[in-house]
Image 1: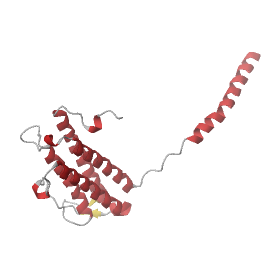
Image 2: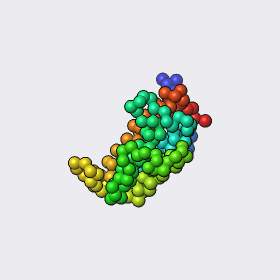
Image 3: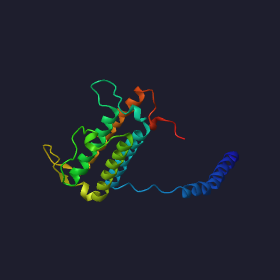
Image 4: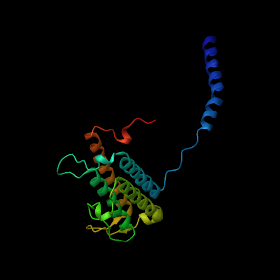
Length: 191
């Protein structure tokens, strides 16, 4: 019985000795950041898919821009033009304008003559959308708009729809990389 009391006392003493160290570790950890507002969450997602599209546009060699996996597919350039020009379906609708580009805009119609021109266009599409999201904020993105469909949509839903659309086509562009024996930027080991 004396041995049990001794072991229990030792365990209690060790536990009490460790508590200050644990408290110091807990104090060193910063509390979690507050959750982003709804419009901040949309903006983060918009900018993240935009970053991926910009990176892939900058990375692929220009001589691969006209590659397409089969005759019925869009070229890499065509997919990139389609997905980024489609971002204006959100941007323009949010500003009460008719979307400025058709589903598959032609490079010549946009005065895109080189990879550099297309990269600039991709950056502009992403930036313009981000600016509208910031300007609208939580209240503005909650507005209902008529985007030509059978019912009104909230701008939040329209933004997330375009983010999803962009992500689907980003995956499409990754396949173009792989079909050319290349590793897309997001799949490369981080340095």
